[in-house]
Amino acid sequence: MNGTQASRIADLERLLRRIAREHAPSALASSLSAEDMVITDSILRLGLDIEIFTLDTGRMHADTLNLVSAIRERYGYTMRVQQPESEAVTDYVTRFGRDAFYTGPELRERCCAIRKVAPLGLALRGKRSWITGQRRAQSATRSALALQEFDAARGLAKFNPLVEWSGDEVWSYIGAHRVPYNRLYDQGYRSIGCAPCTRPTVAGEDVRAGRWWWEQSGARECGLHVAGDGRLVRSGETVS
Image (cartoon, rainbow, N blue to C red; front, side, top):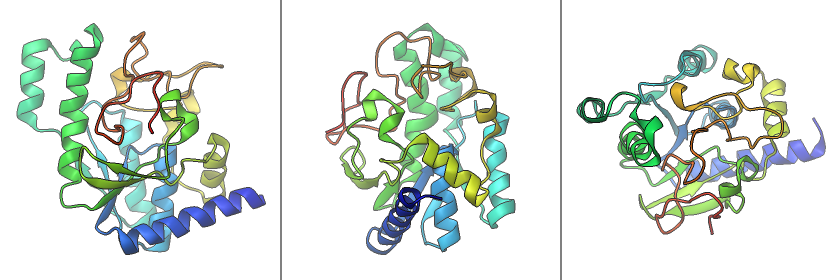
């Protein structure tokens, strides 16, 4: 491990300790991505009082959900798994069809709102702050991401501890600490969401190019992450 990586880890641990001390109750909203697994390992290794939860949209890859049990086996920690309201999902499927999100951004964003955004709000209820695994290098819409923000839409402090990390640094940490990770990464996936909305990427593509790849323009985000004023960030825009 080089000096830069050691410094990154020290900064991460220092920030997580501060969040646990000054912004409790706090939670890591984990997508079970490689980034979120790094933060999960740090939280549990340090024994911090920060909840870790994930969203099960009902359309996840089995490889992704397998990490819930892997975390329990490795760390002895049982994650909270937040699911969408069944009535809302049933209404969407009945009215538009199970895979209607392929027909256009409006129905895709509505599906995300039901399966991801609404459950996130429920999971964050009662929290003072939340933590994400977002990095600036992941996409153009995240290029101006801050270490600490205020989520005006939810009235919470929001922290992005890995904001300056590179992908190589994430994977170096995973290897050095033997952190469990989603085996879909070994198959060419670089950003993993719901199964029907995620594909592997090819050389030269953006990290998040495999998400909602059929959309040629628009947000290309699910609505979980918004600008400081509560506005959804669109492609080509940055978060100030």
